[in-house]
Amino acid sequence: MGKKKNKNRLEPESLGLPLVGVESHAHLDLDDFDEDREAIIERAKASGVAQIINVFLGPDAFERNHHLFDDHPEISFLLGVHPNNADTLTDDVLSRMHDHFKANPRLKGVGEIGLDYYWERVDHGVQKEAFIKQLLLARELDLPVVIHSRDANEDCIKILVEQGFKDTPVLWHCFGSGLELAQPVIDNGWHISIPGPVTFRKTDDLQAAVARIPLDKLLVETDCPYLAPEPWRGKRNHPALAAFTAKRVAEIKGRSVEDIWQITGDNARRFFSL
View (cartoon, rainbow, N blue to C red):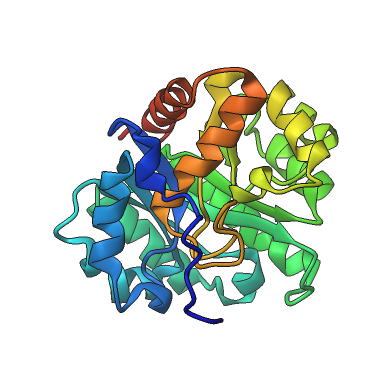
């Protein structure tokens, strides 16, 4: 990807948002950020991001990288085994996760966990078993759950309901569907996090879903380094760019971007007990 800059591309700082926003799903521990991680974190603050939730994909990643954020108390953590790695969830891995949650108060939820039938990397039965085991861990620890679901929504919802997670703290991460998914998620009392693609053209179904999601159940995220919003689509995503997602959500909701920034930030703080 070339280094040529588009001088007409809006910068997130230019939105002038207050320091109240929450980036609810980032992967800042990945090596995509090794060269400028500190600058990226500072830029998030300059763009109004008060707090960040960093997601560690398994205990190995947590043990290896959580020290990267020792000087950043505004960054909290999630820990979970992704469905595409569900075959790695041994009893030892589950035990290590349990110990980390007990020992580290910065770990605020179990995630991202769930089902992924798009890549077909792991047998569906193995994914379901790993999903249920991690749901039971979340229940034991009284922690919220962050869901990854790709081409598996029906099974994901079924398992959550069967395991007694209706009307409990569940967050549907990186929501990219329409009302056919939004409505059952809403009906079950769960939260929904909106990523950058809401800013793309030809996402009418997603935008219709955003219009229906109750304000008190709504969060924003980047899922960085992936899925950068317009006007940075195709570039590396980072937490500051959540401001553009909030801006588009505000337009859909008929609210000011400052209102949505505050509301989604407050929702995230309540959900994760920040």
